[in-house]
Picture 1 (cartoon, rainbow, N blue to C red):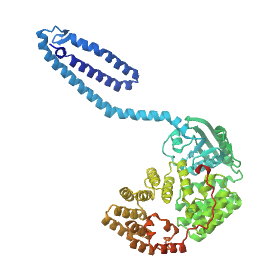
Picture 2 (cartoon, one colour; picture 1 turned 90 degrees about the horizontal axis):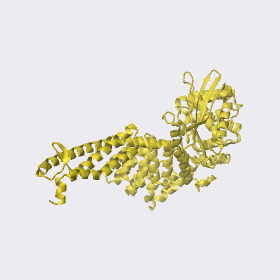
Picture 3 (cartoon, rainbow, N blue to C red; picture 1 turned 135 degrees about the vertical axis):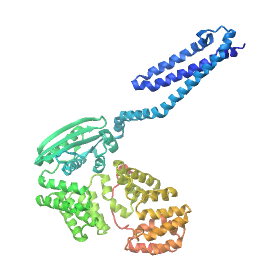
Picture 4 (cartoon, rainbow, N blue to C red; picture 1 turned 90 degrees about the vertical axis):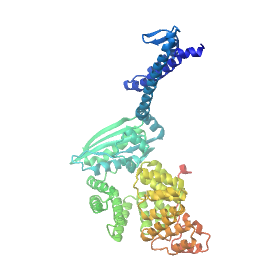
Length: 605
């Protein structure tokens, strides 16, 4: 008998396979159960070593021993052994099949049930371990976010005070040299998300979190405040203040000074509050500011009443006059008050604020915006805004002040840089990414616009115009089906219908495009420019010029931007385009004559 035949007769191969299968089965069970008892992985490795070392002795035993009805005995090579061998083989095969079935079941359970749970726990554990290190590496220099203070009043009716206190602290801290402060919009947006201090710091890209609570009972004010180093997830300073309400400015100044001391940053001159403000007037102002931030047109009368009472008590209260100037014009924007008298009151309040604090850039920025919006006087707007720029130290703030006028002047490059900076500083605010998408579109950066629009929609799926801007950018980037899908989710007719029609036409769905075109004709919100764009993109030049000829100056459809519209470039070679150019230049030419000097921040070069 040959050696291989003898191996087969003695079931050595089957014994080896059985040993390997059962060894693997035991190891799988160990890997699954040991972690439940917090047993170390080294025990699993020990099992692997034991089974590996025992493999050869197992084969030797299989050679010299045979399985009989009476148990194991030495293999004699007799005819009896030969007769028993087939039965032994069948038993061994059955054991192998059973082991394989068990192994497959355990493997499936471990792979598809236990593995995802282990991975989830592993990811969370790893994330928790790396949060502090990641935050420390990502945040450059000292930075802080002031969270909305908790309202600890008996009836929970002092939200105006807790929010106002936190906002004024932000203003104080923002004046510190070398300290970056997260914006109010970003910090307050995380109010109810239930995040830890480290998670909030990561979202806001800051190193420290300032939080606290406030309660006013009669004239007694209690303030509790804590400063957290999110990189270490530890409290580095805390304090309780029990004072009279008249000391509210002193408390704010002390908190700012303590934060400056802990973070080793310097306070600019004028960081402390003006303690000459009347506390009663300040309380009225905080109530007005709380309502103002709700942006509810129905609150206008209450806000004006509170602020009017505040300036009657303290005629030199700059912030109250400044907010009065804003709320009067917002009445016009919200269409809840007559235009002329409201704007006149707004101008008067702004002039009073400028008299009180002539060094305030905010006042001149506001007056410039009003000259731009209501008077359509770009030159006067440039005068006010240039003055505001001169009163501002921060180079990025200089660009921000000029943003509205820069857009009217067509200076898109600076606006893109400003919006990119704002998006980096406020990564959780949908509106910021929405504006950045617009800036990218204005500058012809359609791929970037797609990314920003998607980010805005992720943060706020219902943001007005979000899907419209995404659809426009996708269409201009040549992705017509995706543009059509995005446009279908947009609620604004003036954005949804034109892109849908053009995308359908580009996809050779001309009948469907005609149906949408009919909807455009029936909608009062769709501009004639959109019809010109549709026909220009289709290549129907005659219909495009026919639409351009019906543009209305009263509807602001004739504007210098028409000449730079990328949808209409196919018309530029037609002899009729010159007539369009002449009409635009006669009605609303590009304001190249308006001069505005805006220094470009060094980091943008």
